Image (cartoon, rainbow over all chains, first blue to last red; front, side, top):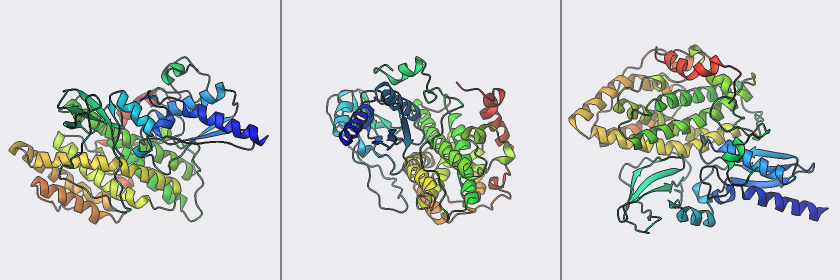
Length: 172
Length: 276
């Protein structure tokens, strides 16, 4: 019995992990780091914990629906999707595999998120030089064109070597 | 469900109530599955009032930011303003959901956004002022984001775990908002004669509304330090205006809020039970 439950949890987790992200479909929810856990309660309910990337991310409802549908289709009748807000999502949770897939699709993966001590967030007005390598030609001669792009989680950059624009998943 | 694409499988028509993806009313609870118990030490009515005021600030300014769509000076700025508005809208949804759990009414986020009238809104008047020109909009955003960032930083340690989590998440987003606005205020203040003059006009007309932000909290010094840093770099004076009487926190608003709400609420009120 214990073995069955264990293998059920493993199977449910694997199913949930493979659900694609609606906005970045080359990534799974596991790659993106938004699937925070999958457990099975004593009454057999599969509980999957999801965390939003940004507060206003409109993809959250689709993610929830995607995980629930995938688990039900696989025979898990009782499924509960919980929202987890703590700790808040950070781009550091995108897995190495997720970073590889982003780059492969022409999207620059995020650099390490800033580590801030508790307390007021300082405001820096001097330009911060960051080097985001071009995902196409690997040139580091690139520049930011806009810190906001087609989805909350991305910024717009362009490569000055191959002249191509590209998106960058913002560090947060 | 087909494995290819989540949107496609949703569009096929799931009988699942959570398979709803279009924009509109009838979203599911954004706090679904979060432990919503209020700790014993927390005054639920005060908590609800805080969530309502912060939710109203975010909803109203999100609406103003969305008005820039198709009108911004450049496509990149339009996307930036819309994205900032989207973050604020997300914060508003979470805050309204928390308010509904704690004010004893059990209302949903839609009830707060669409079915309250001008006098019921508790946003600061700064948020509802018309966009004006780009100088007006970025100065307002700088003040709003600086204040909200400082306030959310404090709230991340508040005893209510749900509000603390909403605030901690918001801090990351607001850091980007403040940065965006600060860079524009410097660029315009330190730009041409025309852009400098427009920033001065914006400062003069908005400064009397600032005091309202500080009424209940102790973040004034931190916010004014941010502001001074930006205005110094922009070559702009730091105004010291007499505050205007009244407060949006008491439901007293300018004549600009009612038309904003009329536009925001018209579809939901014409079709009160509709979902799509």
